Image 1 (cartoon, helix red, strand yellow):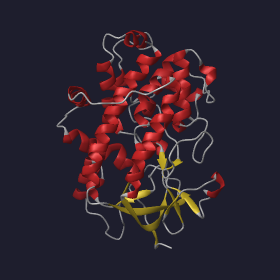
Image 2 (image 1 turned 60 degrees about the vertical axis):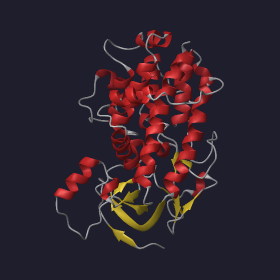
Image 3 (image 1 turned 120 degrees about the vertical axis):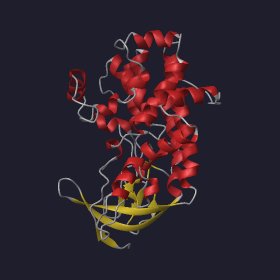
Image 4 (image 1 turned 180 degrees about the horizontal axis):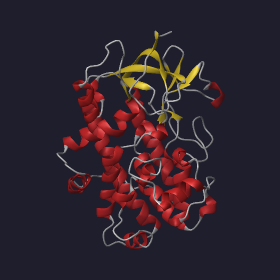
Length: 346
């Protein structure tokens, strides 16, 4: 068994639903791409009928994260109403399919009837006027369905919001065949990579790394940032630098100007989330396989409760390769968001 130590990490995310997939900038880039692609379409007119004056997809793309707390300021009456009607809304953002799997399957290990695939499926059905066709029925209004779609299409293109790493007692990646195997004793859930800690500050969000570098710390304490946060934030920073974009809107203009070849989805739009989830699983495989699991450590959460995590190291080309991956996934998210709304409202 790996060496077991006691540390209090500076990483604060404890579940894949508690972090912001693609962060604020990445989600807004997805929305900004869709906003530009929808101009002068019937879908834009139908969408605007559900929006308040001045709202667009780029602005609404972070609403579903803002509603989780006070990150974006005080909760609005609309947010309070939503959280009261949807107490499990934070679980809409992800699914936990073993990353080794080839495809998302209803009822499979790590899936739930309110996970990201099922919630997207339901939200799409609501806008299609056929909400009863989905097994997940959180009771969304059309406006709520649109708001969630604007966000969750971005989330599902973040590979760690779909592909989950499970570990055994020796810190080896395993693919549980049943839910009962994930018992926290023999098989552990890394919670979307939140419990896989990168010690190398090159993989931390820029502001985070600068703060730690400027503040001397007790070297007896090992510091790490979660792999999930790396994929939420750092890869977006790297992707935006890669194309010299200073804002989500500029990212969108540059991306569209390059005329990317985003293959169209086939069939009923309500089935598209399955296709996106399967693609995310394919992207998650190298995201995990290019890491090496090291020491298992014990952390203390805000309630004073201990839990296990693992320090990991990443391959030498991890940052460079994944900046390209993130750019491609964000662009696909924007194009697919626009295509989805056009398919719902032709």
